Amino acid sequence: MTFVPVGAGSLTATLSVADNATGGPQTATLNGTATPAPTFTISSPTGPQTIAAGGSATYTITVTPQNGSFNNAVTFVASGLPAGATATFQPTSVTPGGSAASSTLTIQTGTVQTAAAKVGWGLAAPALAALGLFFLPGKRRRRWITMAVLLLTSFGAVTAMTGCGGGFAIPKAPLQTYTVTVTATSGAIQQTTTVTLTVQ
Image 1 (cartoon, rainbow, N blue to C red):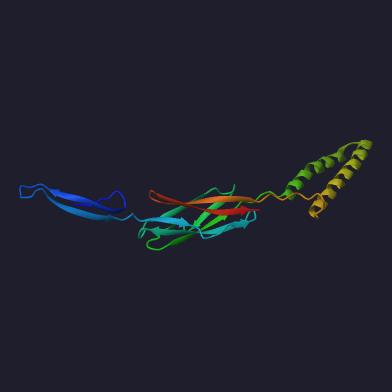
Image 2: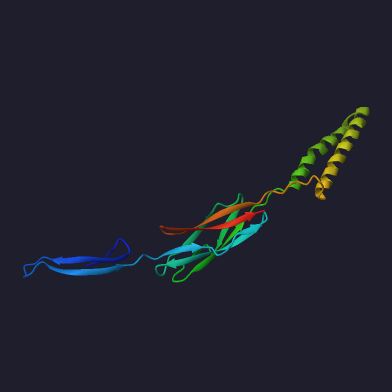
């Protein structure tokens, strides 16, 4: 006789034996308690992180066994990352057994082009055009060179005021907050938790 429950909890059954003895059939009451199969949960005790673009943030990911020891390996993946970011786990998998086990998630963000760099490239085209004026002949060249010098001087003044915090400051990129989902998998079992990352 085997006991193969399909759900957790206390279960009862009746064994009935048909025979030719007096008082048949003979019966006996059976009782069994089914316990849930071992599984696990995951969580992160690390609070929200704020970093500059190009920086990295670390989070602790904790795997806790449930319903007894969980003796299978648990692996991790992260989704919902900022564009250009990568996620790594160290170690890449854990086997909790009878107690909690942890892995460290590191999110490395990508760098972004700064506003100052964009302004610099924006000035490159007028500067190259002005250089070409030196190849014009005669009086036309002198007139256009004078205009080009005045134009480049104006661009230089605007750039200097921007670099020194003048009235033409370029606005900073807004903060962006991401909810990163961490999925832990062991066989057919999957559990998830989330962490919060803000990139300046």
